[in-house]
Image (tube, rainbow, N blue to C red; front, side, top):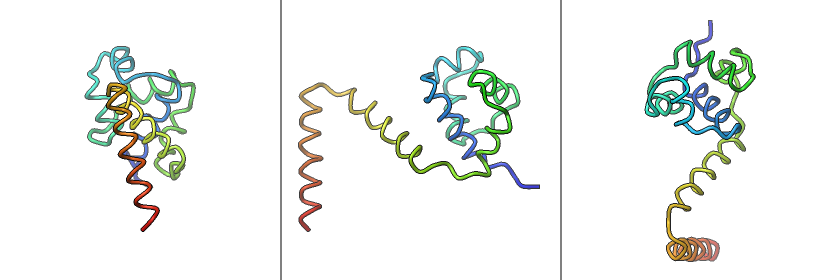
Length: 117
């Protein structure tokens, strides 16, 4: 019997949550658990339990099997890139407009320098 890959299961759960525009806070409040617990599941620091698995299945209208099968299927590279991009944007938007402009200038400089060498 093939073992479950909880890393990929957590990534699938994160993808489902984000795809449906739910925050970890909303999921945690609905489940009556902490945000840290949801984060730990999504980032493979703890294993999910059946209650959480069934909750995600019902909330996002997917089968339990489809969540668990994420452990057997490679997660699309595009999905991973999108998750990283969303996280970068969340961090970027925490800065003031002036700071965002400076960050943009630095990144453009790095890209320019990287392309000339």
